[in-house]
Amino acid sequence: MSEEETDITHNYGDALISLTEENEDSSKETFEPFVGKCFLSEEEAYEWHVTKYADLHNHNLLPSEEEHFLPSYCVIEKEDEKLILLLKEASLSIRQILRVLELEKKVKHGYLPFLSKDLYNYFDCLFRENDKNDAMDFVQYCFQAKVNDPNFQYSLKLDADNKLENIFWCPAHCFDWYQKFGDVVVFDTTYKINAYDMPFGIFIGMDNYGKTILFGCALLRDVSSGGPNDFVLINRKNGLDVTYVKMMKHPPKTILTDQDPWMTEAIAREMPSTKHAFCIWHITSKFSGRSESINAFIKRFVSSHSTLVQLMKQVHLAMEDIEETQFHNTMLVTFRGSSLRTLSPLEQEAHNISTPYAFKIFQE
Image (tube, rainbow, N blue to C red; front, side, top):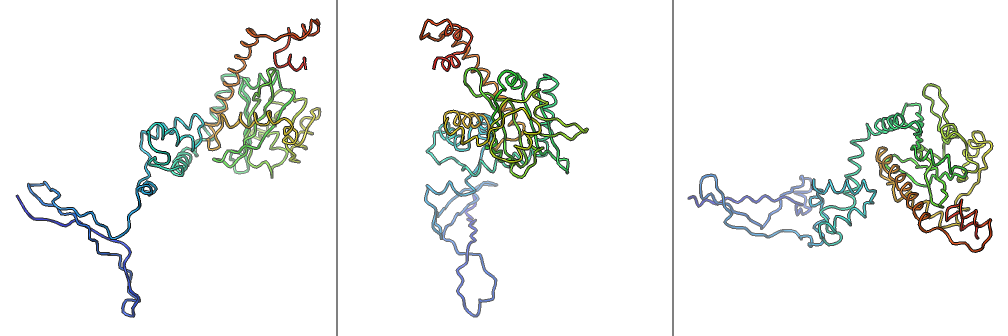
């Protein structure tokens, strides 16, 4: 058994340099004496044991409540990554993801081994890894969806560098809804997909139960500086001129948009029989419930940090939610019905052919 002890302490930090003529031009020395020590002794062959340890420091230590902010402490484990990706797919925000993880790990609020900025960086890295194939995967998804159901509609516009500039797509169920309820359409571009720095436009309307429904979606390169072709979404490939009206088979009777002048030009040319109403937010401010339902509808399913393929899945989820709501409303009509206020045959006939939402408006 050897009693030899070895000091393994190495200490570097900011030197305490006094500005004198002798050392004024000398290079800065980073070695700083350190009083902490750790001694090891070799008691048997290839076995070392700690014999002495002095936990002393020549600098102030961070308090325990600040330690977890150090970069070396911020680590996202593999097990956490799986749950984080699952929660992101469910369209939870960064703040919501952190809160779920805190509850799952049973840790105090703010004491996870990573911060919100670490999650932003993590998602940013994932986006950069998938960025090269994201547009191609999206196009392939649209192509396959069109093969599976001819009612699926989509159009792509490429810029001068052959890069994706504008995208419009309409799932098959949304196409069917437009044929039934597409008399009045709202085109909203207030939401933005941060991953591509592109406004996310949605064509929405209202069904016969008074619920918000989806007619189609679009990603636009730059709405404010665009031209009228951005709205009609021209696909110049093979010389085709595919517009919203051509894809949806007929124009709406009324469309509500904001006051962008290029929309006026495009709508006047492509939809001459359509009434175009401006100042959508001025109009809907009188009906705050409808305005809030539109915003809630978008935020409930769409994440501003989504990739194209994720965005497609989120829109598909929104479509399924609308369909499920319609089934539920139909069931309620069957079992609940509506009460008559009079014995008028006209009211009875309206009751027989109208949904509860439409019949209530008729009664009022």
